[in-house]
Image (cartoon, helix red, strand yellow):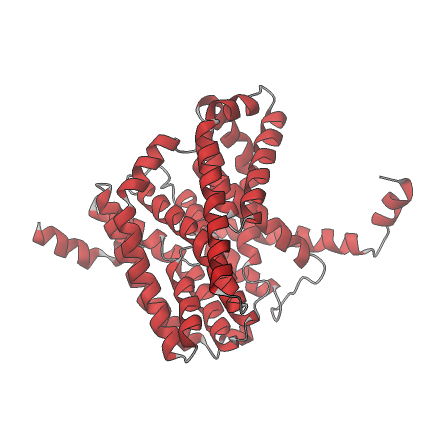
Length: 401
């Protein structure tokens, strides 16, 4: 960097110094929230989300200089979350689980998209608006679910492959749904929507095939005794694949997850070790960013509708998780935990809400945003206390057995 640029960047009162101060205070606040969450044995995600509302537009302590930086860093958070989860499994194991969970994916679609479609129709949004709200209520938050699994120590649980299968099936389905709904909401023709969906599906299939076909080469490419080299190689490959996948209107999260599946053995172990601190940092920023663009005052008028829809789809996600985990042979407790983990909605739902708002469906966008915020905060708490909340169901199940 030129000397003059260094002097300017470090000058008193510069925008960069304000960004550093704001971001430093944010990290300290997140650290305190993490300490509180561990003290009470709950996931830190709801606290991060509430902090985002406090630091965002209309909040008590907005961040005018660092908001843009946080928004950009949040993209890296979801990529790292899905990469590190992929590192926990092998491609063969996960492919077998996906095949078993096909029926659960259909149950998920019917039970969770249905209430959103009906609500959109009753709100007078027309069939296209109803389809948009169906997408909002259908898809769980991969980022929140994965963080909750880690926070609560459930990555190795019997029901976890079922949870991840549902998340990946939803993300793959989004590769078709998002291009189609984006084109239609933007006033495009049906054939344009079909072409966009075909391109996205092709991208997912290409990434999946490449991760299997070149698995050994990829593992050798990232192998090194130097931690820095492992971090740079794995992160570079992951961002490249995730970015290329997103360019073709598919999910960057799916691309990152498949890279994680492709790495095996010692390479996967080393990657987990060196990337975990980085993942924790950017995941915290990802959850914080949820609320930064939401004014809490805008949520109040739509809160009754959003909460009512949230209660209905909380129950339907619990049923989805119960059914999917049962197909993996999980215990009734595990089935409840699986359902609770899937309750939170997040990144894809926010994206669909934004598309609806841009298309002139302002009321629908507000309801969708309120709905996502409610379940993003409540979902991790349901995941933590799912067994306690479901004790009547467990007793009924034991009696029936």
